[in-house]
Length: 106
Image (cartoon, rainbow, N blue to C red; front, side, top):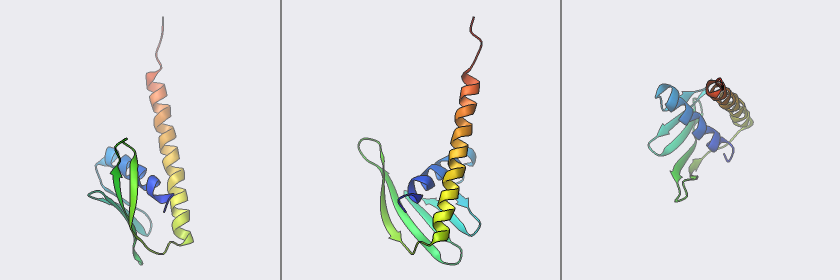
């Protein structure tokens, strides 16, 4: 869960920016923002984890586990794949910003 939560927050933030949706659908699971909580639910096993997300006084995100169910290898693999996709998205966005900020200088 220590790996999944920050990745999940970044994915949801990206999804909110792109489409305004507060949930992501995976093959057999859903990641959803519910108020100030992040919930990962497997279609067959139900809720796997629920985490409260808040900002501390220095503006950093803090995660407080509310419910953590049994985490299986397939979940870890799912979050590793999600992290890979997120890194690709971030890299593409950074490349787009660099391309758009380059201009002609005389």
